[in-house]
Amino acid sequence: MTNYKYHHLGIPTKTPVKGEKYLAEYKVWHCGYEESEYGIEWMRYEDGCNLPEIVKTVPHVAFEVDDIYEAIRGKKVIIEPNSPSEGNIVAFIEENGAPVEFIQVRRT
Image 1 (spheres, one colour):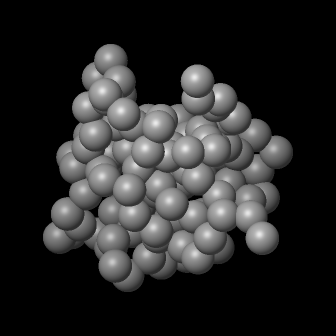
Image 2 (cartoon, helix red, strand yellow):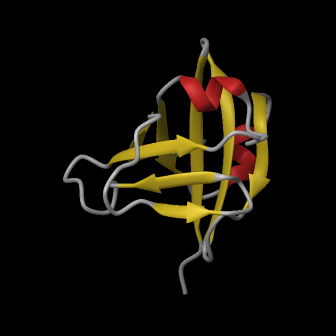
Image 3 (cartoon, rainbow, N blue to C red):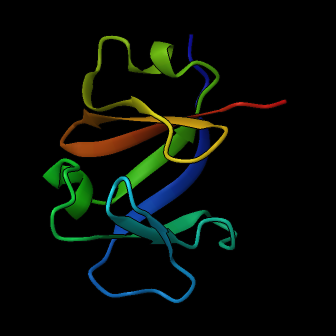
């Protein structure tokens, strides 16, 4: 059984947000969840970003999980497990027409 711990809410925007950081590999700007008491993260996607359209246009909820492969087993995976930042593995599924992100944090 997978345990889900709320991590953040990702909201797409087309407007630059103060303090955003760039993930060149994904052509994405993001910011906010580390500073937000409620984990609100703003996501701005550049032209040419290859992520699924649903991720670029619909807000997503993200959950921390112990085993990302268990969390996505049998689900409609729209972004395969990958590591956008050191120490994290993420994947996205589509559930009921909305993107859901899972994050596995490598703890030392």
